[in-house]
Length: 235
Image 1 (cartoon, rainbow, N blue to C red):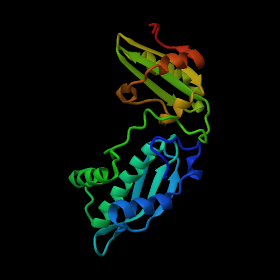
Image 2: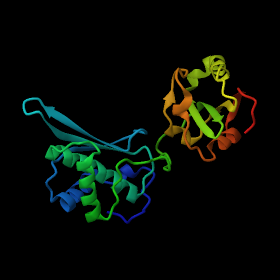
Image 3: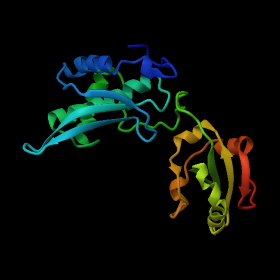
Image 4: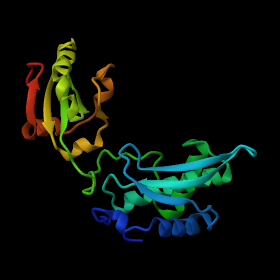
């Protein structure tokens, strides 16, 4: 194991053996009692790790079969260990038939492992502060930047939406909020890779697209290609 805070290489999949990490942690915190499972990397931007199990229909018991860790974001050693141990607790839950998701039993085991390891294991993992790994290819997106009062939002689209820019503009113009402002830009900004990509025009309230975006709207306004300013209010 490398030191706390050590930055793993841009493709850290070549630097970390999931099998070795699993064996070490299993022995250190579960006395080697966790069952062997398939260990693999994935490139998910919506989750940092996941455990799969198979239900035995005869016994009604679910047995763990696979654990995946996402290499989509850059991780340092400390964050990697938090994620890995979090998922190993889910393995323990399946193995002990104590699967209550992130409920009381998960929290109790998390406290035990945290106490032994000195690693604070999160109930969930916030990856909003992480950068996208260099091995994830960037591409150009169509982006709607929005402000409504003190709320900021971003909608990211595939460039196939170009043929429907008029419809998108009409949708944005239909929003009646007095303080609403929006523009459409095209950009290759790497932070856009963190967002879900829409393939169709929105058909629901825009509330889901609002989130803290420190400096991002101004940066995209400066670096992106302006397509249309839908509302005239200035930021």
